[in-house]
Image 1: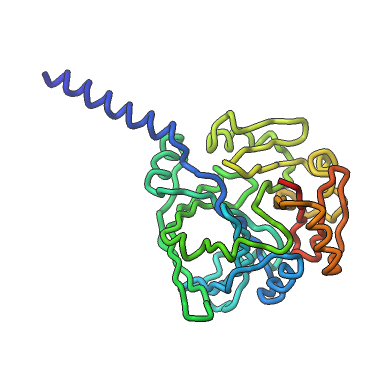
Image 2: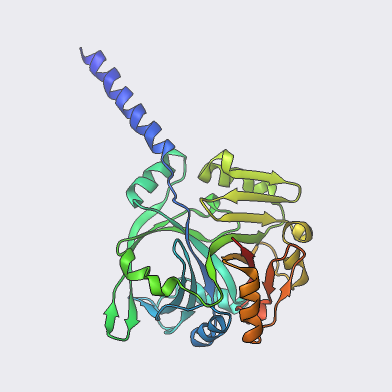
Length: 304
């Protein structure tokens, strides 16, 4: 009888483990982070491009604040330092080198389940940790709350990434904040420049599954659940994203470009012309904005 019970218990454990492995541990990308030296100047710069940042937020207990450019599923976080005497989560070190894309946050609808799913894949996270911020609204303050899971660096090579779960999404996603004059609808891709793209293929396959990873000559693409992560060798940029090769590069690895979907490229171009925003069209038809206007981000707009 004891042996039978042991076998039944092991079968149950195996069934639970299989379910954990089948269930996605990460539900896509929640947001990307852009480190900026002057938060208020950055808000005005992205506002000129036709993005409508939500009201300013301040991280409780930290020396950082943000403006978020919200879309229905994800968002861009403009992150700056407002009190250098407090904890900045290494943003100060990043800004000593440059402005620009500094990392991204993956989404989770259950941090405990995400941690278990990743642990089943051999990836050990830290947390979840609690974090909250204050959004400065005209009629008072709102306090969104989150839970964060820290990923080991070897799980996301060439990326600084963590996992976030929103406890109060209704305070962050508001319909009025998701409508932008330039027609932007959401995030499509992030491009990272790495010396050896093939070296990142296995770690990201372990994170998202081997079916999510496409190895090309000189680049690797990862489907992270709606947003493509593109890892390209410096010499492959003209083939992977022709627009990126026209701009100065940083020593690898670095996050170079961000692709945003818009309703209509013609409407977006018209908006840029009305606002005297310099841009150029790539051969693909995509609109490109120079990083001097976007705090170091090579920003690409495509229809979708």
